[in-house]
Image (cartoon, rainbow, N blue to C red; front, top):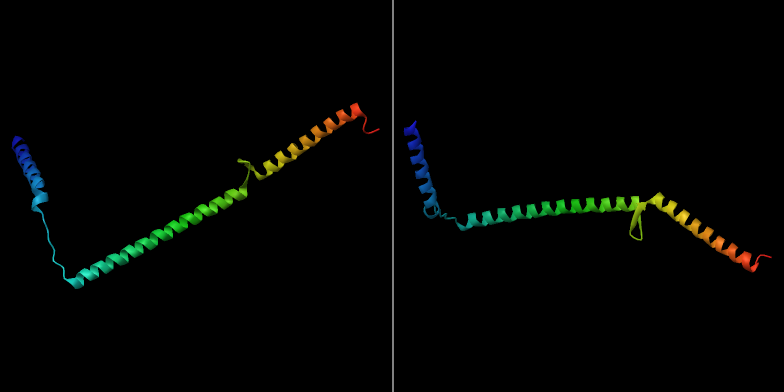
Length: 120
């Protein structure tokens, strides 16, 4: 058991030394002729153009989804003075608000009428 562990330790130390020296020892140079380099550049440009088109299409789809959602929200809820209520709840509120103002005005008129006798 100890012999195997010593061998594993030796292998690990050797791997560590190789990895320490790897950035300086592993240098690769490639010679490419001009025609191949042009093909590589053209393929890269085509790939980049395709990727850009795909991303633009995706962004357009997401933007249209957001626009559709905003339209649905606007249809579902209308904004009055920064307060979002359901459309029918707003009509309900406005009906009783106007009704209350009319009744309040009528009470004021009747009080003044009883004092000044305008209706006689």
